[in-house]
Image (cartoon, rainbow, N blue to C red; front, side, top):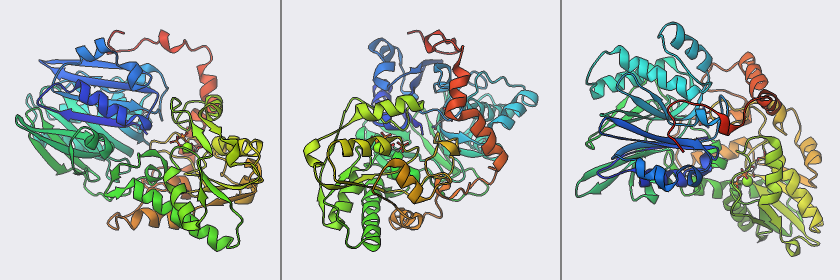
Length: 507
Ligand SMILES: O=P(O)(O)OC[C@H]1O[C@H](OP(=O)(O)OP(=O)(O)O)[C@H](O)[C@@H]1O
Ligand SMILES: NC(=O)CC[C@H](N)C(=O)O
Ligand SMILES: [Mg+2]
């Protein structure tokens, strides 16, 4: 679930891009990149690491120009190597750089066509490099020295015809401007905003509205599914629907876990949606167990805080912070490798024993995916002296892989896959486990914006909206990307600092 941003400004954009990426850091912790443009030259810095580690003062000084794009990465395709950090660059036509959030489901076919038919070379295993080359090829085919907005929109239309899967994209075209677009289902989020200055309007396109508000941009609106927003370097903005048919089916997991609560996505306040998740979950508890003996409700920081607070309120039970989060440890779910994830849960969360001793505690998390967090946490609660440990998930059981930009490629790694709730309860060691129902989750988000036509809920119901994901595709994905397969493929591979890549700036 990467984060993307692009800015057209009346002044240098380096600091504004850096700040926006910091605000989007929760969407990707593996790598970060910024590219700016000035006087016929791109200036690129990208590497593995957090935003604060990748961009040091000398890098920032050299990222000159009033136009630029940025990316924070959480890999879902290819490898975690710095060579696959984004933005990607292609020199023809014009010089284009691109930042992508999502995952293409036909990347292999496209890569083959790009080589055989379009005579283009792809240098990594990243689907985002494929996407960039499809866009570049479609723009090049038009054969114009100075592309107009219509030609740029027509290249986006061609991308929609060729690419399948999920993609929210921001591309920068040398000397012309930035273009942002969303796939025809609008699976991944993207919005744009404006900042009025004396020198003229400045625009930002970004994954989440929080990066606009933090930088003083006013949210104009979300990019519609299939639509493109093109901002020229002089600040002129054009929008156009570029897909033949489109229907808004945003990813529901953004509201459960990925997005920041202070973002508004497709006119739904993530915060409000999470409050409602807490309410509906409390109602289910009261339905199933009206005589419950819960003494205290506790969130598993960070994401479940909002839902847990509202759940306690609805139940009329005390809300307590029993786990303290180490503010220097990032999100564990998006860390690469199970060993690191497991170790990090213990480093990240520490119990306050007096809140547990002799009590029946209801622990609340936003979701249970691999079960890494709840397994560790329940043991910690017992060690801290809890009498009974109950566990509630604000999302339904995650039973199916994700192919649209969340790195959950393998059903075997999902604790709820092929298991009943009772079996999961035993496996994680809880005295009672309760999950949100999918209909309730959908109503928590839909009631906030009834205009949303459908939700991308594949991790809960196994239905893949793009219609091209079959068992054979899922089996290939599993074989290629499950943890063991990735670990095995790393044997004998040089460490990251030995990686040689193209287009990267010096350290
Ligand atoms: O069942 P699992 O595989 O452990 O995945 C689910 C957990 O991972 C996430 O937390 P994370 O630490 O990534 O982020 P947070 O601090 O935003 O809650 C999520 O909020 C759950 O706590
Ligand atoms: N999580 C994402 O959006 C990933 C983008 C792209 N598929 C990559 O792996 O870099
Ligand atoms: Mg969490």
